[in-house]
Image (cartoon, rainbow, N blue to C red; front, side):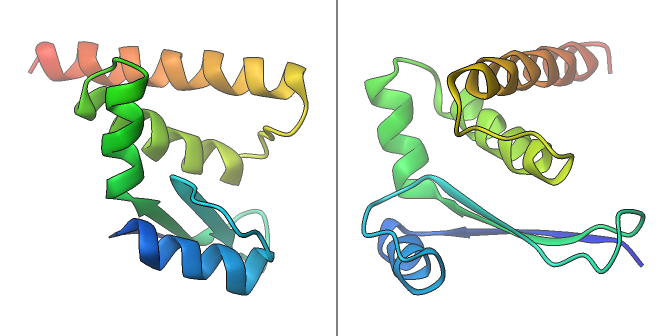
Length: 111
């Protein structure tokens, strides 16, 4: 069985998760937990701070929808094996996010 749960929460809740599970003491927009027993049946929880997405959309001068799409795809890309710790990995992740945002918007227009 495959399952992907997106949990939308506040900055405070995601900060608590970040502290408790990752030992990081800072705000973040997304945390992805891969709970899969194997590579075939992905089971995961993706926590998204709506507060942080709103803030990022303002500071980055993107729309809220675009920033939310970026974060949604970002979490899914992590589950596909993409990383974002090294500069080259970040660039590839952004390229993939942009691709899926564009693809999503094009499919939305054609319906």
